Image 1 (spheres, rainbow, N blue to C red):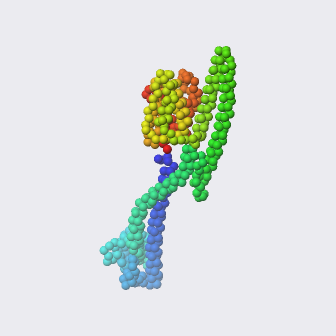
Image 2: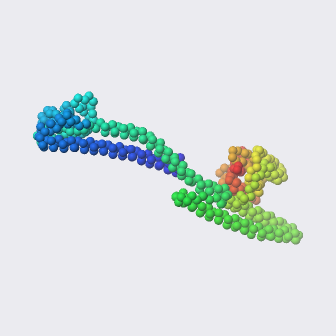
Image 3: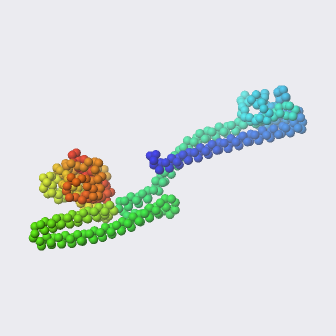
Length: 447
């Protein structure tokens, strides 16, 4: 899963969404905290300047009256004041004593203190100043509201983060799902072409985004594939025609020559020439069939047939050849309805496999039809020496010959054609161990 591009993209979206939400919450918290601090500092600065003006106008007595006025008759909400003489004796204000933590003049600090007459300590922002006469003045403002606001912001952030986590996961899922959905149409077109529908294309949506560009590129490639397949079809048809005709004429000439000579040596030579001509004709025919099947040519001839009946017909055709070798050929089939296949090519593929078994195998031959979930398996098994697993790829390779000891006159195209026919149907061909012997299985998907 970690190598999945879709998963990594979704994870990236998730992380970016989560980091963005966390950064937004932290930024809001910092901005609010700074604004509250600025407001408190501004309030204290205004109060400090007013008291300094009172001192300038009336000296120590003037500022003492102003402190008494602001903390007594004229109560300014949230105001914190304390006036002490140079020895530290309290001269006025709403604090009982100078806070020991605030010893430096001009120093501002957030502290929690009791105002005179109150039983609850309050958070406050205070600043210490020294007056020209040596008195010290503490001015400040209650910041309980600001503290509550920050606590509320922290609580909201605690709720917002889990929500951000959920929405980040949802955004990642939607982003990944959107990409997968946009890729479905190109993949469907490619699958359709792979299945033989060369005219399948990606529908144009006119969005001009990256996926639309991808669709245009895929359509261009598919147009080229369709053109090449058409040219290949014409080339193979022409090649088949051009090769078959001279081979046929050559065989006719050889047959006539064989009928006109009486010398036994000449007759034997002509018979060998006829056999080689037949072998060459079959070789060309098989090679062309493989090429056409690999190119997906022939699906237009698919028809629905009863595979059980088809296997019985094939077995009946090859049974005399098996009897000549004192071997048996039996059929075991499951019940199945009609299956859409290329009848001639499939019969040729199974015939090639049976022919290989007759040439290289031993013991009874069993043709089987097994139906599994979504697919059907056609197999040919014997009790011969089989093929080692390490040589299976060699056996399926075109013109693949396992070794010189396997006599039989084949060209190494039988299994290649069977494998190509299986792929033409969207299936595959496998070689297995029949314990003992070889089992060749063609698996076809059920439509």
